[in-house]
Picture 1 (cartoon, one colour):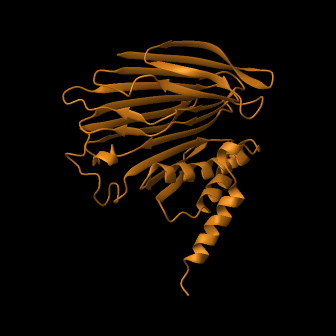
Picture 2 (cartoon, one colour):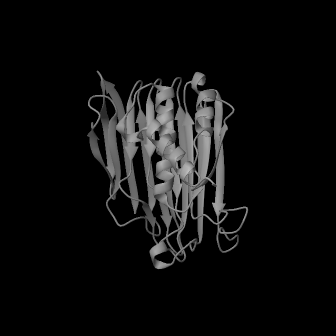
Picture 3 (cartoon, one colour):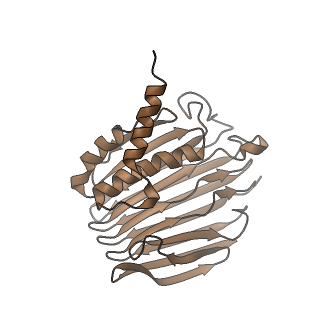
Length: 286
């Protein structure tokens, strides 16, 4: 099946509105809603089938025009079903216009046993564009005893602006050839999360310090500055909620440093840090 979803968003007054929409089954989008009042448009990208099947070709294009602000989510994990001989592919193109803000918060990709999936994401950032992009990968159907039982998972991510390449990442996981639960790979963890952030240049160093102040003993993670415009965060955890919580804390700092507002979707920094400090004290040696 060839699924298609093309979305263009524009700024209308104080809010972001849908300008153009084109879709073909099994993809569709819930029209923008505004839980924060006028301002960011929230959208859910939907696959109306049970997941991605052998032979599927999925194409998603999202464009934000000048000054638009969108929070894009998926309602559930992307399930990649068994495909013993073939494969499936997804290509996503994101374009963030001048001064626009895109928060892309997809649920994890879950490759089932014998799945074979290629994912390509291309992102273009215009001048002053801000991006918060989360990519999550799970091990499979743990409830059925599946863990890294897929044939392969390939991910290619490219982020660029008018001056050139900002990020170029490509990796291919083939558990049968290179076991993922060994040291030096997943280090005994089951879930992988990657966060790319692009923010005002003046905020980068402060964000790096903010992130390094986050204390989390329940995951293994690191953060680094990119050559220009942004930061990269990668984390390993034992479950999806742990990654969610960690990236929401990162998002709260990102939001405060990038445009100064406090939204309910990213939670409370001070509350999170107080909880972590209390946990450390509770578990400190006598």
